[in-house]
Structure formats: structure tokens, C-alpha cells
Image 1 (cartoon, each protein chain N blue to C red):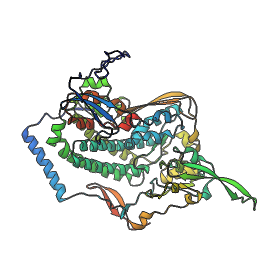
Image 2: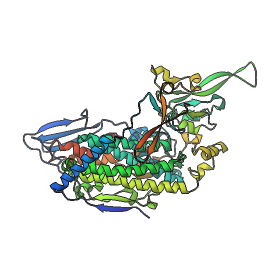
Image 3: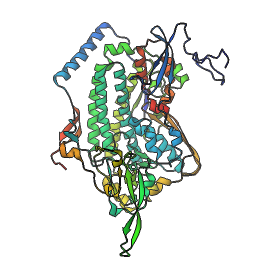
Image 4: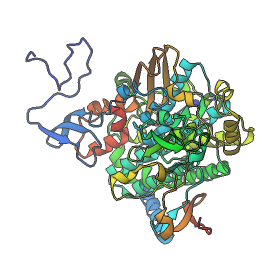
Length: 414
Length: 182
Ligand code: SF4
Ligand code: SF4
């Protein structure tokens, strides 16, 4: 390597890539390793260089929870990777597996019936709220606001309870399957969901008072970690982080999937680009998800029950399976699904998880296993923001910026 | 009706008066919860949550229904379920034995995805609605064919009081005692 290549300064462009320079290295800088054991760093390490108390450079060092998701996805059939991919972000399980399922559906040429689509959206939005509340809780405890931490974690439990009633599991629901979903809503679910929605609305008002408008919190977040719009676009940020910087990008709007184009909701976009704006995006998104849940639950209650799996699968159901679907609302799997072959081809699945856009590229060579499953998770795309949002701030701002980016290492490392 | 983008912006950096006012709001909220706390503590194991019927807990085999199709073992994502071969008296030829296959489960590996229960063509597998069972050693978590047919003893239920966790409009999650101890 030649002496001029500056790894940390960001000038290194031996691949011919245009590299966005971060701050220059000053003379008397110390290198501080935040993590991976630091309680506030998650399963990652941020290497910062500080000049006095001011961060001049930051390098996110990822890969501590790499679990070879993509490779494991190639060796266990088509339906078994669903519980596996959930492990990338277990509190966002439906959002993170749905695009994979949709990609496989495209290859198989099946489509979920309308009712199943509504059910998927229902669980996706429950997951989105739970995921935002989880991020919110972690964020608050980063800032030392333990009240908000307890509140958010406690209120997340309401939505986990809803998901449990719907799917039978608290977190790893394994709910969508190619061609439909696994369960219909149980008795009394719509009322339960409505109660949860009304409860959460009131709580959001209290969150506003306790956290968002709290002068201490505001002075720690306002103008901190600003990512301008053009930088956010250049870095390719997704999800609430992009929307906090004024980029109106949400897969639910750009390329509506399932039944999102039939629902009435707003995608909040803030232009400030600082930690506070990102926080407001998430809180607003919770409010919008509550609206979606209400609409979906109304629809599910009004419409008569119908099979929640694709016609072609339902046709093959023996009488016992049909009976169980009718009496218990449980869509059974068929034995051939374990070792099914999927026609050769390639398909892309996109979806908006709580943290942003996730993309699956699924390729089949006509065999019993996927030939390739490429996963690009939102956290993997957002992690680069650390490098550009941190420099210039004091070390005490690091937790605030980290928390506001809602970065989730297991999802990024896959 | 369609989704749309809602462009918003934050309010400007506020004055001192606003700061004082929000501080008072926060304090009032604190006082409200100090006087009227909303706690929900489950005194486990003296109380335990009675989970809904659809809960995906431990899996039990009804051997007489099993047709030895091995679908459950094939679909298991974590290879927790395996087929074993056992000798059984043949009903058609008295006095003779025949080999039959049955599933057994390794609860060290099971992730409670419920695929096996959903794939079984004869409903020979079912979930019980509890999962909090402790084992002294790992070897006990390999269930043989005998264990697999018995619902495990739910010790928590013997000692604790069942409560049902419900969502309340004002209080969030609340626990309601369950009378029948089943
Ligand atoms: S619940 Fe899932 S992991 Fe457990 S034995 Fe059944 S299929 Fe395997
Ligand atoms: S799927 Fe059901 S019938 Fe088939 S081997 Fe397993 S338990 Fe027996």
C-alpha cells in the first residue's frame, strides 16, 4: 500500500469509487473504542477518534453477530428459512420475513388471498409499533431517561400480547407462508386490538409530555447528529432515518405491497435531519400504524371468513384440514411443502420494516433449496450514517445519535 | 383512500417560558402517576399467566393417530424432530412384530415454530399452552417416545394462581384472576 492512501480520512478510492470524505484527522487525537462490550453499544464497536472531547472521526466496526444467514438460507428448503430469517430482528418478525415470502410466492406463481393480505398487514403494523417502542426504549435509556425506558418497554408488551393472541408466539411468529398466512384472527381479537389502539393513543400524548417536549431531552437532541438531505441520499439511508432528513421514501408508498394502497395513512417526513426529527418520525409512525390497525381490524371483522391460503393450495387440502381451518382458523401446511421444488427463476422482494427498506433477491435453479438468497437489511444500509453523523459532536452526544439512528446490529450483520 | 406523504417540520427552538411550561407538564405527569400508580407486576411463580388456547407451547404426540409419514421430521427447521424405529406387535399377524416409525423430539433444539403441528396430516401432534418448564439436565430435554406422549407436569400450575393477561383501554395490560384451575 502506498503511503498516501488514507484509510480513515475517507480518500481511499482504489476501486474507483467516489468516497465521501469525513473529517480530517487532527494532530493530537486519541482513539477510543466504544464497544463491543460497552452496555450502550449493542453488538458492535464504534471506533472514535477524539480531539479533547470532540469526535473528529468515527468508524462503525460491525460483524460481531454475523450468523451467515444468506448461506444458511441455501441449505434448508424454501419454507424453513422463514423462522431463520426472523432471527435477524425478532421483534420485527413479520416485516422482515414477508418480503422473502413474497419473493418465493412470485417464483411459485401463487398469491395470498385478500384476507391473508390484510392479516399480514395487521401483524406487520403490530410489529412496526413494537419495534419502534423497543428502539424508543433503548434510545431513552441511552439518554438516561429511565422512565421512558420503562414506559416504552411496558407498552410494547401490549402489542406483543396482541401478536401472541394472533399467532401463538410472542416474538418469532413465523406467520406468513408462501401462499397465505398461518392463522386467522381468534374470537374477540378486533375488540382487543381496538382497546390497544385507544390505549396507545393516550399514551402517545403522555410520551409527548414526558419525553418529546421535555426540555432536557430537547436540548440533547435538537440539532444533534444532523444528516442533511443530500448526504442522506448519497449514503443511501432508508427508513425513518431517511424520512427524518426530508426524503419521502417508504416502500409502502413507492411500491405498495399487500393491501397498503387501499389503506388510509400518512408517511411522516421531517426535514430537519437531526436526532429529534428522527425521533418524531418514529412517534408519528406509531400513530399512523395505529390507524392502519383500526382499518384492517374493521375490514377483517366485516368481511366473511375465507380461506387464508392460495386457491391452488386450498384445493389440495384434505377434508380434515378444511375443517380445522373453519373451526380453529388455523391454516395447516401440506407435507410436500417441506421438500417442495420451486420453478427456476429469480425474484426480488421488497418491504418496509420498522427500520427501513429490506430487499431479498431470491434465485432458484428449480431445486428443493434456494440457489441464492441475498438479503440487504435496513440496518446494514443505515450503519454508514455513524461515520458522517458523529464527527463534530462531543462524546456525550454519541448515545443520543446512536439511539436516534435505531441501529440494530443482528439485523445489519445477518 | 391511499397512503400519502405527510411533510412536517418541528417547532422552532422554544423560549424559556415554553421550557418552564413543559417542565411543569412533566412534573404533573409524575405526580399523577405517583398518586395513582399503574403497576402491573406478575408475581411469578405465585401467579402465572394462563395463556390462550392457541399458544404454541410444548408439543405432544398422540401416538394412536400417527401414520408414520415423517412429514413433521422433514419440515422441522431446526432438526429437533427425528423419526425412530420401534418394534410393535403387528395387529394383522398376532405373535409377530413389525417395525414402525414414530417421531421423537429434542427440546434443546426446538424453536416452537409449530410447523410440525401444522404439517401433521392427522393432527397427531398438538401444543399445550404452557412453556415454562425447567430441566435439571440437558439429557432430560431429549424426549423418548414415552415422554413424548405425556403432557409434561406443569409444576408452576401446582404452586401458583393462574391469571389471565388482558388489554385494558385505560391501564394497558392488566391481570385478571382465573377461577377454574385447569
Ligand atoms: S415446533 Fe418447530 S422446531 Fe419444534 S419440533 Fe416442531 S417443527 Fe421442529
Ligand atoms: S406428521 Fe404426524 S402422522 Fe406424520 S409422522 Fe409426524 S406425527 Fe406422525
